[in-house]
Image (cartoon, rainbow, N blue to C red; front, side, top):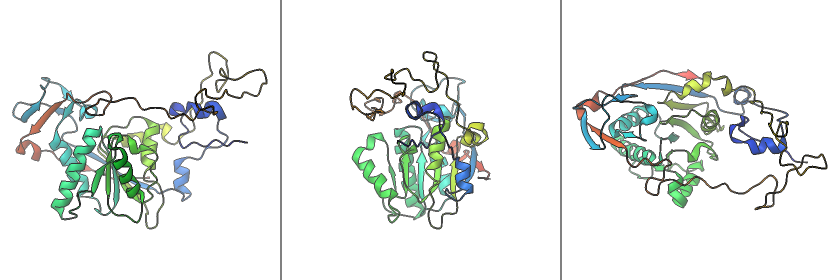
Length: 318
């Protein structure tokens, strides 16, 4: 007998699991896990800033690279992909760092690997300025481009007895597969419109730990709107009937004949279901991103314009 388990019951990213095992016989939601005490509840701080969107105005600062498009309104999804304003990111970093415990383990989700490196530097600089540390590994970046060094940093971060690194910045690498039980803060500095990925990101903080009554989500990107989506904690999405074989899940690749519905072994690994490692899409050789974000607009704001960037926040509890 084989038992299939998945932490992402929504069908978007795990068709192979459903195709092999069929429909789930039991589902246990995140809300139930929190209510039953198996998972840690959380507090969300939605943060609104005066530069969440941006339209270039002559005199704002120096255009370091590129040409601002006259009248164009740059929105959250554009920042750190087609436009970069370092002072905007730095002000965001200062805002949440002024409100958290500097000894608490924290994961910061950034728009790209380059953005994660920038945020790491701002965090370390501000931590030194605050007198919290002189260790340059207080915050480290863990992304696909960081290789073995990044994996070692992640392993150390997950060790509850170790205090350095205290903060990790990443783009997408740490949304899954991180068993760090003592994560107390998650900072969202990039959009997350995929419900499965959003649940996985929230899951980085739900591990229970002694003295951990809740964890905090600092939300700069309106990700808290996902909590109002029925898919946040609803029933699994029903699978579609295959137009070819007319069954759910699809049985097109069955061996057939014996009525058992057993899949053919993979031609490469000879396993069923296939356990071959699926390669990640190749990114740009320089920035590591896909699509490339090398040729983006960069603006260095004047001191006066930077001081005008303000933030406010509220609190929501789950």
